[in-house]
Length: 173
Image 1 (cartoon, rainbow, N blue to C red):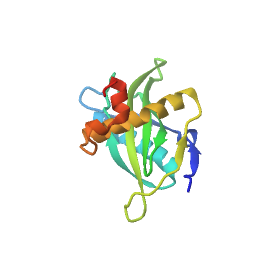
Image 2: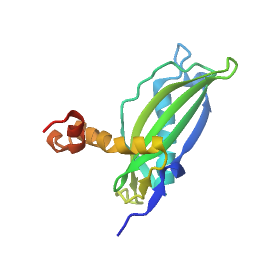
Image 3: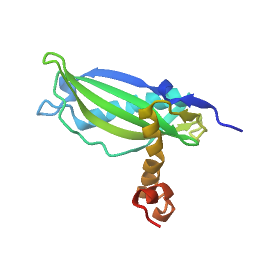
Image 4: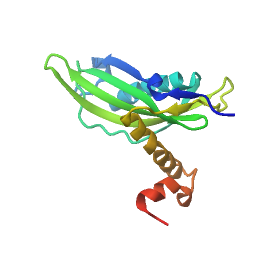
């Protein structure tokens, strides 16, 4: 039986938050843990939109903080499923910070989260196939299998020699 298909654009989420005093550290920068929380929420909503299911966070790829986000900045998170596998989905997130009075906006963070769709008992359940349409969606879709294999190797769930997509990156035989 062929899996149901769904365009990745249908999973797009834009979430906006104001950085308040309770969100910051002693330097008046948004705390990393608070940022991770916001990213997890936006990514989970995206995965739920794609799968129409309850989802659980399976992994988070490296999250690097390029520039501090200050107290009073507006944070905008944009998340979208890049590719789905049988029950898992990779979600890409971009985080933008905006200083409205100064009229400045910059990209602060980017990351990939993986979610697994589960049934009411918490068992993994099949999700629709993700259909990439734009050039950027196709680029992210194409890289998702390599990122997945890297996650599995690093997590001890795949032997490096079995990571065919990763080997092709390094032209290893």
